[in-house]
Every structure is written in structure tokens, then in C-alpha cells.
Image (cartoon, rainbow, N blue to C red; front, side):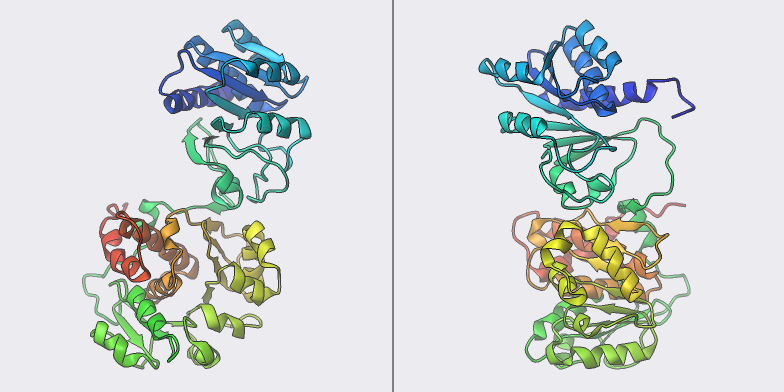
Amino acid sequence: MASLPEGVLMQRAAAGLAYAVIDLLSGAYGKRIVLLVGSGDNGGDALYAGALLARRGAQVEAWLLSDEAHPGGLVALRTAGGRVVKLSEGYGSLSGSQPSVVIDGIVGIGGKPGLRPDAEAALTLLAGIPVVSVDTPSGVCVDTGEVDGAHVAADLTVAFGTYKPCHLLDPAASACGTVQLVDIGLRLPTPAIESLEAADVADLVPRPAPDGHKYSRGVVGLRVGSATYPGAALLAVSGANTGLAGMVRYVGTASEWVKRHNPEVVGDGQAQAWVVGSGSADGANSALAFARASGVPLVIDADSLRALNGPLGVPAILTPHAGELAALIREDRGEIEARPLHYARLAAKRFDAVVLLKGRRTTIASPDPATPVRVNTTGTSWLATAGSGDVLGGLIGSLLAAGLAPIDAASAGAWLHGAAATLASAGGPVTASGVAAAIPAVIRSLPAVSS
């Protein structure tokens, strides 16, 4: 910011915001646009964008929530023919035509969670009108993705320079609507939160060496399922048996059934990684003890999570949903769902393991505080189906056995799993088996590996 003339970044942001609104409205001419303007730079962005929209023929009105609105932005809007009013005056103008869109420039990345009563009242009055938020929805906690009190629920958020944690992390991510990123030329530091894209996953997915063989490609073992839940074994094996590892071993009560559906799966023996817990019922503790004694990396799911009481002494990935994590660390489930970043980090530190906290936006934390937390953005609500977590555990296990670091195995596995669900659900509902079947197609569709 210090290397650029004053105001350049704001002008870039305002232009990106204005053109995003034009795209949303399929043009600006004749549209009525209300700006909710606070005292910060987001309010300035909204005012300058409003000036551009006014020059394109829109009827733009700025409702001021502060006496300290950006002075240059106010001049620009008035010069372009826009109208500037205090909040109470804006209310009276609603007796005519309804606005086409509301631009939320109330507070920015420096704002505290929650909204002042006057801002909340304005949003209530404008309910039902599409909202475009400037950079972040006002009222959410930008750095943690938490919400505390009233906040904007946007239809579109126009982010500047880079995504912020609240764009990725629930529950705030749910308030962002569609997020559109505008490059304003920032030089960015190493992030605390990151999200993999297809090219990143392509770089991580293991590929056979020219002289590779089934053992060098990795052997993943699974001790999952039970007489009560034999299907969990088949689903976990199907997630592991996607060609990412050289061999899949299965040990358990569903052995005959597993091998009938997956004839290439073999029995007991050494493995480079073990997956335990899915549908294991009463055998979960013994499965974990066996796998832990092997000294190789582990994926620990479902029933085996209950056996944990501290660090395992081997590299591990824990894959709880919010309810399982609540039981594991004795916290309220609602608190975990409200603060997934906090609790994923807490559990990763407590158990010295990578923690993959499942959810709409799965959050993956490393025990190393210097490693960025990863948030997975692939997937669909159709993925909320019985057995999908079993498939995910097996898939992550195969990546772990193939040599990926735990944080990479967990985050690449979550990305592939979500993308497979999206592919499989293109025609409607999908089952966990359908998700597993779609994984190889997703892998084949990844972009060419970068040099």
C-alpha cells in the first residue's frame, strides 16, 4: 500500500465492485441502488462505486450511518449525480420504487462482530432486496469466521485482493453468498488460512514412478466395519480402492463381502498407513491399539475416536464431525459448530494430530501452529448421506499410504471427496457408493501437473 499513490487501491476496489453490481443487475441504467455507508474504507469503496454506477445511469442514494463518511467518496457521488442522505431520510424515500440492490459498506475488516441497532434496523427495512457486501459482510468476525449478533446476509460479496478467513470458514461463509474476488494488485504474506484449488490437488495426487510397483506406491490397511455395520467396511474400502495406492488390505468381519465386491483387496499384512474406526462398534478400541502398535501413520474415524485420550505417538489424522469432536473434547456441539476454526486448532494441539473437522466447510488443522489451516470448499449438500464419511476415511488413508504428509492427505482427500459428490449428484441425489465411484473420474479430470 505504501508503494502506490494514495487512493489507487480504493479506486481499483470500487471499480471492481461497480462492475460486479452491473453484472448482477444486467446493467445499471434505470436501476435504483441504495448504499449503506459507514465511516471506514468499505464505505468509501461503496461511495466511489456508487459514483461509477450513477454515471452509468443508475439512481444511487447513499444512506449515511456515520457523520464521518469518506469525504472524497461523498464528493465523487454527489458530482456524479448521486444523492446523499442521513439514515432517517433514506427510510422516507422507500415509499416510492423499491431498490434493485443494496450495497453493504457499513463496516470493513477492522469492524467488530455484530451491528449497531441503526444498521440492523436499516437492514430489516430493506429485507428481501438483494445485498452486495463490500469485501466482507458487515457484522461477521473477519479473522475467525465466527458470528456474534446481527450481521449482513449477502447475496454477493465482492472481495478485494485475497479471500479473507470469513469467506472460507463457517458460519460466516454462509453469510457471504457468492464470493467474487477482485485482484487489486496486493503483494500478500503467507496466509493463516488457505483453500486448495484443482491445480493444488493435481500437484499433490500421487503418480506412479516409471519403475514403481504396487509396494512402492503404498499399501493402505483398513480395520473397519463390524457384524453390525458391514457396509461401513465396504464403503471405506471403496474410498481407499481408487487407484491412488498400490494395494489395499482389509482385516475384519466383513472380509468375504469386501473381497466379493473388490477382488483385488488382500488380507492382513504390513501397511504404510491404517484406517480404523468406521462402523467398528465394539471392536474400535482393539482396532486402534493394533494400528497404533504398527508405528505407521493412522486415519482415525468414528468409533475409534472415543478411545483417544491424548497424543498417539505416531502421525495421525482424526476425522470427526462436530458431534464426535464435542464428545471427544467434552464441549458443546453448538459451540463447535459456531467456532470450527478454534476447536479444530484446539483438538489438533491436544492430540498432536491433524484434525479434519467435517462440515459444510470442512476445516483441517495441523498440530504445527505455523502450518496454515485448510478449509475445503468443494462438495454439495447431497453429500450429507450415510456412509460418506466412511468413503472419505478410506480415501485419505490411501493418500497417506502413498506418501503424502498428513495435512496434505487430509486436505486433498476432502477436496476429491467433495468434487466427486458434486460430479455424482449432477442428476440429483447421490449415495456414498456413488461418491466413491466418481472419485477416479475426478482424479482424471484434474489439470496437468505444474512444472
